[in-house]
Length: 246
Image 1 (cartoon, rainbow, N blue to C red):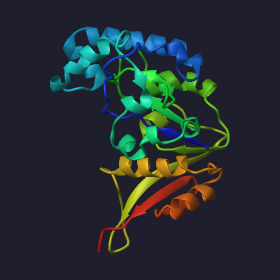
Image 2: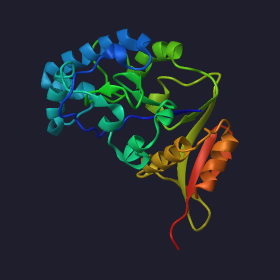
Image 3: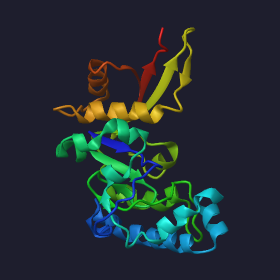
Image 4: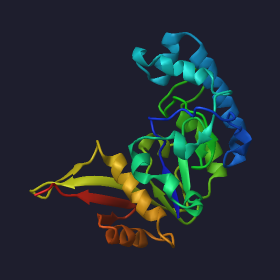
């Protein structure tokens, strides 16, 4: 089983440590596209402020993020599990899971392509929707390299949003996409939008805590049901269902 996670918009900048070593990140065959994109991001962030903010989809109140990006080659790096600190990662609590569980995780990244939880990276600001000058859309930029590099076999449990999924979707592996819904009193379902990251964090924690990793969608559903979650399988979709408190 491979668990694909999104990055988090919220990041904790490491206070000290050596800078990122691109060649030491998972799948070193991605080093060259990482180098090119890193330089493009630094160059854009150091250029005209209005152009940089537009390229990165940032508001004027977020101009301080540009200075963060300008220092990426020399900024302190730390394990990605400590840098990504959004809701999903707060619920997942990767640091508490064994190393073997970390080996079953890849975190999608607009800047790095993918990283393992233990890969050392600096805090940065760039989403998959960014449009850097003289650079194609980031999903299209990463797709050829990720297609060559990533394993395409077994079971892939996919927690990513659509933009990151567009950068790489397995062709041969069995892909299970995790969604979340609230069941209303009349039986209708509404998408859990504001807390879907928390739900996915809970799902990932249950699956990565299994002594024997699930190998099929049915085994995934069984593990989650035993953990107290209400789930339904629908082809390549795993729906986590929540009911309002009575």
